[in-house]
Length: 156
Image (cartoon, rainbow, N blue to C red; front, top):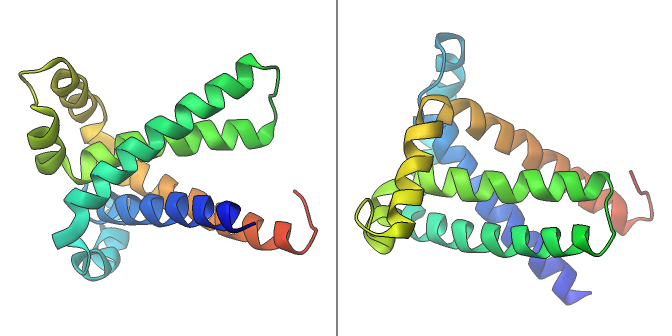
């Protein structure tokens, strides 16, 4: 039971952190600028730590992705698997976008192979970072509601 709580907290906290910073500081269409103005003071509190959180999010997202792909290859596929794949994707992409300077320094972007991969993520998804951040926050809210309901025997 403790491990379930630990996995949920690590996934949820890293997703909320990188999604919040990406939603507040990322490129977004004009209608979302109002939402970004609201989120910027909240995201400012974790700006100093976002590099470390982003690295944790990328590593954890990669672990989740491997775990889910192996589960799919084993024959298990459900709506929870789709949400898990979306979570892993958002952790990797938003972790890269939110803490790009730390990620680039850690993986040697754009000189090394891994660095080129993360540089490609930055170029591909940089224009919609704000939207992906908001999607991540909505997914984190869904995860929290579902986790609480599951503890009381209500399964969605």
